[in-house]
Image (cartoon, rainbow, N blue to C red; front, top):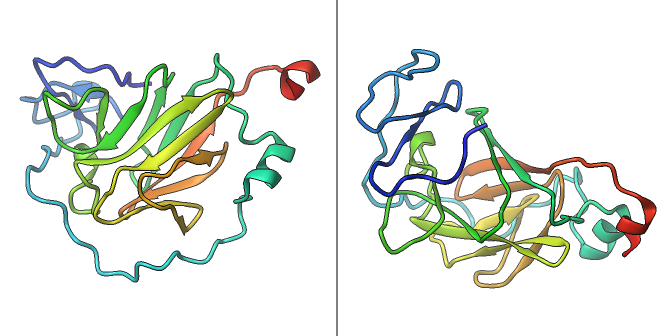
Amino acid sequence: MPNTTLSTQERPVVCLHCGYYCRSDDTRCRQCGAPLSQPSNHRTTWLDYDAQPAPSQGKHPTTTSSLASAHLDLFLPQASAIFQFRPSGLVISSQLDKPLILGRGYSETVKNLLDLSGIGAADLGVSRVHCTLRRYGKQLLIVDMGSSNGTFINGERIAAHHDRVVAHGNDIRIGELTFTIFFTVTQLSTSQLLS
């Protein structure tokens, strides 16, 4: 799977077909041969939808208490997060050993940015610095960084600059770009789950 550590000298382009990281001057993927789309530098597209939270689909639990009882929010130190983007199918894995910013473009001042330009982030309303994922104890937190078009967990808009717990299997939407987040599955003893 692609690594989220990128060289500051050259910004790779992600192949939308196979997820392979290619050089920024490539026009075709070196792995599968598919044509590459180049990142867009234009402003965030303001989306025209109601700012009220969308009703939950009932697919995943949304309250911390129900998540804790199912252990779906347990994100142990040895776990990785896997992001599966839709509809592109791009899959990215990250250890999240430091906070990861989801956004678009490149900036010398923004560290550890996962640039989503290659999958149409600007047209889907993703801000340059949209949201941050970070570890906190045995949980994974997400915070909207004051984005133009909001961050949603299972259809529920989260307040800007307020941490929310993310659970295994949650659907995350940033602007109109959607991904499901999975935590790596490791064999756990009962004592690990309860501690």
